[in-house]
Image (cartoon, rainbow, N blue to C red; front, side, top):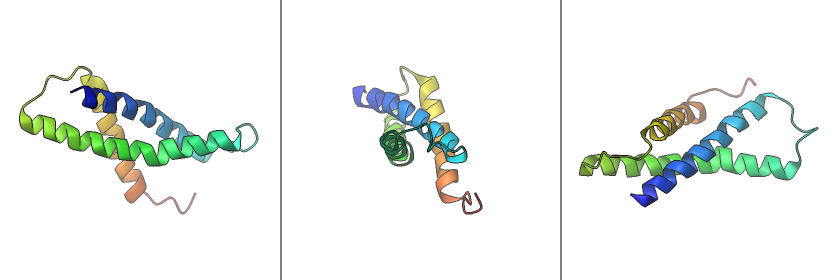
Length: 99
């Protein structure tokens, strides 16, 4: 259960980075944000967040199938799953070619 708690917290932080990347995608940030910060945000937001969310979703499914439903932070788990569903839609179904 400690591993799931860690994944929940790490996923929440990376989901915030993902949302920040979405905002930075639509505003010009080259003037005021260093390239190294942009690189870290892109790796954390676009790559790591969806991977952590995928691992967390599988782990959550296993926990629910085993009958363990006493989560310490259910609100964060729900928020992470909502962001994960949005990420799936954004990465696989949303057409970003016209932006």
